[in-house]
Image (cartoon, rainbow, N blue to C red):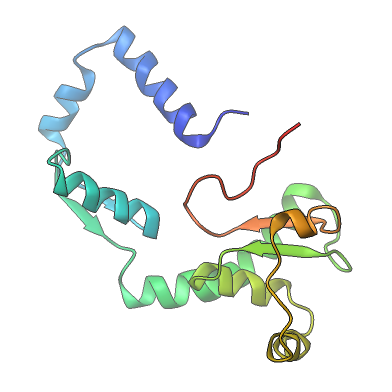
Amino acid sequence: MPSSRSFLLSIIRDGLKSDPKRYHRMKERLVGVSEETTTGVKRLYQMQANGTLLFPAINGNDSVTKSKFDNLYGCRHSLPDGLMRATDVMIAGKMAVVCGYGDVGKGCAAALEIDPICALQALVEGLRVLTLEDVVSQADIFVTTTGNKDISWLTT
């Protein structure tokens, strides 16, 4: 399955074949864009620094209500709901792995942890954070909460 980025680039490439000037015309009318992910904002800052950002961009990710409420608390509701709707499988009794522990990762971990006191006790007792290779054969659900690439991948 192609990555989201390669899929998006293929759509853009196909559009350029049929109308090579389409994006030039769009750029002239574009007022700006907004971005609401940490990784997306980081990429926009990189584009600005190297002169390739062609229009104004609004950083919605760093507003307190977005980062502290939507990221942390919103995913507590949407993650279990989305998993159950997408898979039609009960998640009770399943082992879940959350990759990443920013605000979104914290919310996802809280949503999937059945006993947060036990989780805290395990941490205080010095249990280590495991690599994916250590848990891949045991876990039922994998959740990545970062926009970085190569977090999880399959080799055959």
